[in-house]
Image 1 (cartoon, rainbow, N blue to C red):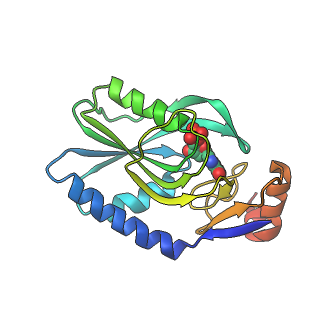
Image 2 (spheres, rainbow, N blue to C red; image 1 turned 180 degrees about the horizontal axis):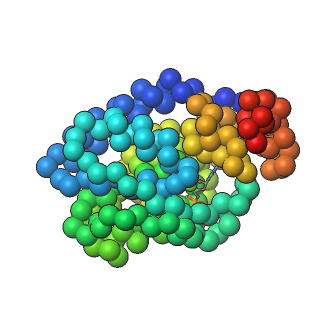
Image 3 (cartoon, rainbow, N blue to C red; image 1 turned 135 degrees about the horizontal axis):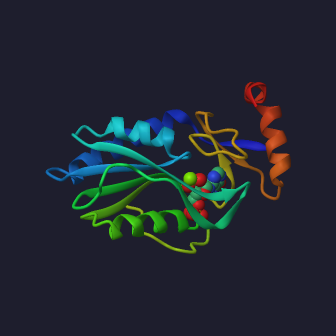
Length: 191
Ligand code: IMP
Ligand code: MG
């Protein structure tokens, strides 16, 4: 029911390359990473440590998904504390899907006077874009499937899986969740 789409080892190498690229692109700038919780927590930690430059790292919590569907509405649950006016902001998220989340946060950063706003996403899903943005650093293109692992969850489970796993098309959320518990018993013990 769940099949491995991207292995952790491949992701680590790709993240290291992206980190070096970002450091080069932002030489002499005031780079401020803003990771979107919860999904971006692992990617943010890995990416930040792969950037060999003096940067600041902050987080914001936004919410848009309920189960396997985008709710169509983005909610700011917890703001980042540091100011962004005049700074070069790189918004970090787990996945670029409909674009609603990134577009919402990008606009917010611009309205606060960020000098520049770019996006870094671990995954770029081949899904219809409701609010397209330009993702400057998109690490892996994936098909339009539902995935967990590397920070992405289904009903709160699966974020801590090191690899990215795709759910078979057409399987409803409850079955996907039951499948996760079956396939990864260690997750079920904690659930
Ligand atoms: P968007 O606003 O529709 O682009 O949704 C982006 C957010 O939805 C991401 O930050 C994820 O948290 C979540 N999301 C989108 N696709 C998936 C998926 O396949 N699995 C788990 N979460 C997802
Ligand atoms: Mg998210």
